[in-house]
Every structure is written in C-alpha cells, then in structure tokens.
Image 1 (tube, rainbow, N blue to C red):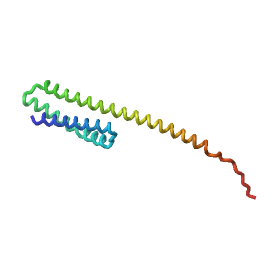
Image 2: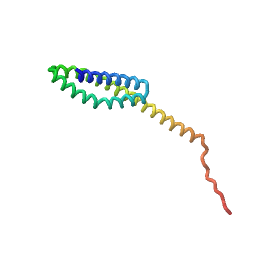
Image 3: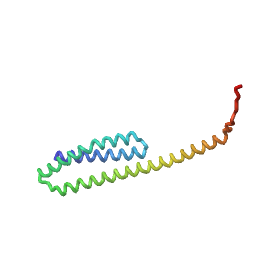
Length: 130
C-alpha cells in the first residue's frame, strides 16, 4: 500500500509543520510561521494527488473504502483542530499587538501635547524694510 503510506506520511508532515507553526506563533518567530505556512501550501496539491492514488489503491486491493475514509477523516479532523488552535493563537497575538499599538498612539499624542505646552508660542515679528 504505497499510495496510502505516502498519504499518511504527508499527513504526518502536515501535523509536524502545524505543531512547529504553533510553537513559532507562541515564540513570535514570524519568519518560521511564514516558512511553515509556505510548506503547508506546497503540501496541499501533493496530498490531493496522493488521496486520489490512495482511493484507486484501496479499490484495487478490495479494501473497504468507507473504513479507510473514516480513518483519514479522523486524521484530517485532528489537523483541522491544530490549525484552529494556530488561528486562535494568531488572533490573540494580533489583539495584543493592536492593544499595544493603541497604547503607543495614545502615548504619542500625550507626548505631542507635552511638547506643545513647553514650546514657547511663535510671536509675530514685524520687520520693516525701509
């Protein structure tokens, strides 16, 4: 069962990458997050091809497609949960970053007000060119 084995290996790779992505999100290592997401995008077409090959293989070997499909669905469900957790982590990090940005913007406004209060007003100066 080469096609089924290849498909299972690709799903294991997906899981490894999704877990690495989650760790990278928690660590704030955005380059690693980007790299993991790129590899996951490249893995998708391969999984589609391998799934089609696995279906053909199951049929050829006379395996119960429903049982095999249920096994795959369990793996896929776990991967979806991993991806949801990663999305939640990113959302939480984004909210924190937005809160920090708001605080910095408020501090910037306060600083400008303080600077204006210590800066003497420009007085009009008339000069005469006689």
